[in-house]
Image (cartoon, rainbow, N blue to C red; front, side, top):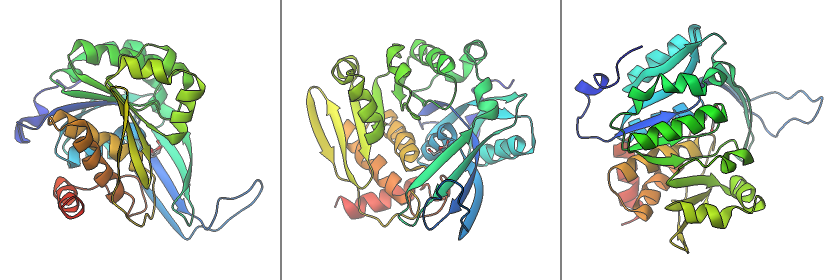
Length: 310
Ligand code: RIB
């Protein structure tokens, strides 16, 4: 296993380091006029095979926005896994913390309808080989990270262990509990900031844990697509309007938000300015089919920010 630390020598040294623990999938995306019903066959007007997975999406979003990123996860020891490693290197992402599993690289089957809404089915494959014990062997990949980002497409026990390791290393912990698992709120994950979408927020509220979760973290951020993003912090609810765009595909928009928010926070921007930057990146990410295809560079984010915030 490669040593963390040397990978970034040729990348900008001052940029903050972000560790992302999470899934890496190959996404098969089909554009359909509407979602198929049971037993129905539909013709897709467009098909795309591209790299995805919530963890890797967040890693790519943060790297394109200017972070030095360490990816921690598990790919299959197969052709898609090898291609994914080359691709991560091309995005200047350190993948020495990505293990090679015995199972196949994770796959996601995605349909996107005429409104840009989607359904996703994931076969986790090697992603589910990331265990608590394996996380203990990856401690060096958390070193010097300003922020560690976590989601829930890898086994919960591994995520809980990663959170502990990240905290011991002194990082701010940003947790995006997606796909939603109510048990994750009962495991005392020491997150500083929680990022949820509306569906996940409903889960938080139905578990009756919203108030007590608010007490134990700096902020809960609720992304709501084209509607204002809610920021629950210090007993108040603040709102940040996203820029208006005509989305083609919203897959990966939430991941873009999380990755760019992490970078902005690590750079020392305040909560609302970080949300503004993340909203802008997420809006830009919806303009093409595919999770990572339209994820913007820092220059593209700054350009849109300067046009939309005056
Ligand atoms: O959040 C979008 C991602 O969810 C897709 O890239 C897919 O791989 C699934 O993990």
